[in-house]
Length: 467
Image (cartoon, rainbow, N blue to C red; front, side, top):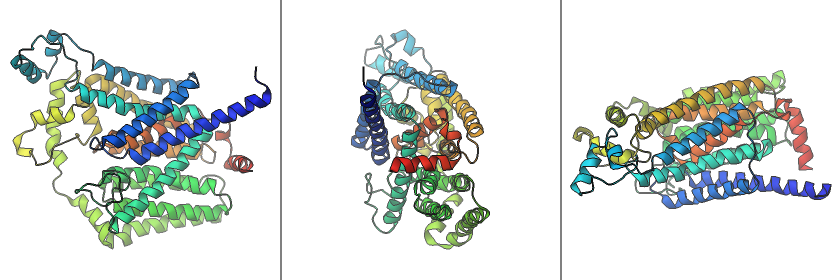
């Protein structure tokens, strides 16, 4: 039996441990998870951090999920893990050779006089094992953020805001002649990548983190009047918007209005005065004029906008090949992590280039090709889950409540990543996969009594904690 004082100290120690585990995993993921398979050391660091974070919460014992949003999310995660593991189970030779799309592999085994050899569903088991290791990171981020509590989740949102500023500053410095200021510098590195190897991923991170930055400045800096905080938050939002242009990313520019809208909703929530409302909307209107009229005349922004006039995009040339390849491997897919090899085997010479196609540049197409019908069903289940939970949380945490801003941040961030996945592969990057998992944990967690209160209650709590 613990005495009351001893139990309180232990609870506080565990709470600090949760914050360290969750915050540490997020920092490591955003700092070292912006690369690709070409940077295995950084990826290994992130995956080890995810394992350590999971070990901490496993030591704390299992906690029963609360509410159907959490149960469904856990079911989707479990189904994904099982699907990946099933792809590695060795199958008898007659079984795997009868699977669609295995003709070339069967011919290779026959030429090697190994026709009776067992083989898994995946055509590249090493790639599938690598996909399982990759999936540990978003899985750990979801579990850690969900188990940590509302206060730690708010801390994670503040860390995301800090990384948005850091990434924006790196984008600016890279354009000022310091392209080597990145973990992923190569001879082909372009300015605007920030903390990422890909400028499109850098841009979508900035857009997805923008509302978190606006909320952090508005709600956490209590030494200044509310109107002043709103002005500073609006200025920070404008700075992030400029750096999105600096990424020269069409996807980032297309998604920027969602980030600006979410930020505006957060800045005007609560109980603002008419003067405060006028100042906030006036600042956003000025920023809109600056972005639409003035900035397009500058060289950097002009280069970004010119990319929308690109007459030919290679992805439109190889997408039909991806669709045909997907049909050839239905209903079970080729196995996760097999896209480069599978696509190269069917790539027509008319679209062959000195570089190779590493991804389908559409997460949905690549998931369908590698995972087949089971992956499509899980993906559809996630999209339905997201729409239902987003509506549920926005209805519960109404405009003006403490929980409104975190829900808006999470909904906007996940929506932006869902839309970006139509034309690119953001969720194949550890940093963005971890960000999406963290936002999903915010949505899956049931709102607390504080989340339903007006913001002044939260500010009072923060002041008491600071003392």
